[in-house]
Image (tube, rainbow, N blue to C red; front, side, top):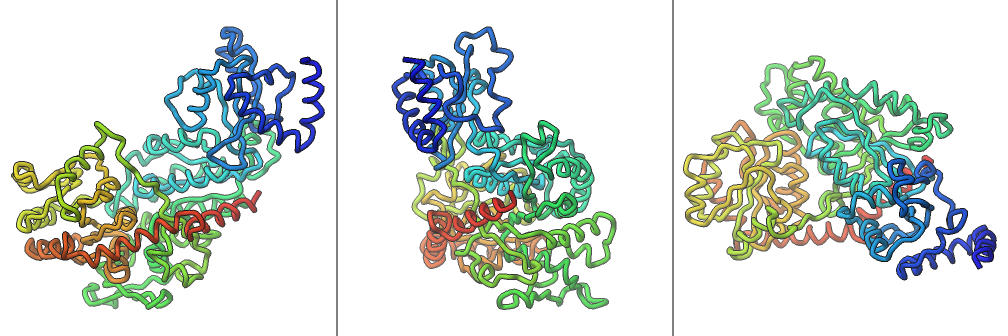
Length: 590
């Protein structure tokens, strides 16, 4: 009987129909807990060449564990990725309980035993899939969106290599766990050993990050520019067909060009902020001689409606360069943005419902007329995980308040409001009687403020990580007091929550103008940034206009944009189409 089965197997599996038929049969056998097929002398489906080095059991278990005595590749459908099989190495006789454990591991349950993590090798993608190198900038606000994009690309069958340094390993870990077969890390030491932040460090960090990674990454990239390499590791990885790197990693452009590989620029910002920032370094506007910039505004005539911004609202990164600070670091920043405009295209974490006016005006001269792929928002919604989770604790506190009555306050992970600004806001919250959740991180709040809020039951101050997405999606939150960092803007818009915009630096003024004047889902708290402290009474009046019934019109527009954003990332939506188009474009480089 076994001999006849082998004879049939040898003939049938040489045809496409035979492989399709067995592909249907195998899950039934696995469900029944019966798997006679591993008795065959060769696998049911030929093992993917990229997995050839995994065809044998781990050395540490060979000859010591009878269950691992014989292991062969068996193909079962991958329910997460249609039409892309998942290869699993099964032992000779597999008890039903362990088959179920296999199914849990297959669907992403990382609580499976270490033995099974070592035993099974999943190949959600084949060696024919495009291989893309991702280079993040090591700051959380930049890196997280690129890693979210990486997850979306991996889910669509791309193989990814993501550069990491010791300071960013923890940020990459969830992605590696989610896509163990299609995403690998490429580790390099770095002289930048902290989570980089705003204007204070940006010049030095640009230079240090590039200096540390340029040579080793260039060598690695050149070694992967051929698919016929004799190096086993390189051959297993396959040729890199594209580089996607953060727009603060412009130094990767000449490396990619030298290797003959196209580079795409990932912008964690919106397209308006990305275009204006690059336009500055391309056109080099500056105030007239002898003018300190108080009455000078920078216009962007190539953008729709030719927006203009006061000189003090232009990024300090650019202003310091234009005002004469042209040292080595500043020149490196300028080169960074000019290199970006030599890339193949821009990939923006934005969407048509929020920035359709600029996306539909493509090609944009301020981005060198390069294609802009609008694939956002890339971040998945984050929900509470239950008891003991900070999101659950915050949601439980919010449950006691009426709809749209609470202000959520956060200035982002890297921005700390100066003491006078924090004091003005604290006084405004108390005078207006607005309940609040303040993600204060390391901000210094006025003496006694937190104690008074806790005693009255009207305020909650969070230190450390804050569950911002979950809080914004709670029905009680009716206003987001924000610095208008782009990630925060996207999260507020996706949640349908109006904002009290208080931009401080970087691209925040561009973002604030977008949500205040164009989307009309925000009210400006102050346009003075770090240099001006608004009166507490002014802030209290602004809060009253956004929270509760007074902000109903603004809230209705925010809910409309949220619905549009949800549609954009859904099946057939604009961002989904853009993402699929990007994947197809990358696939052409194979």
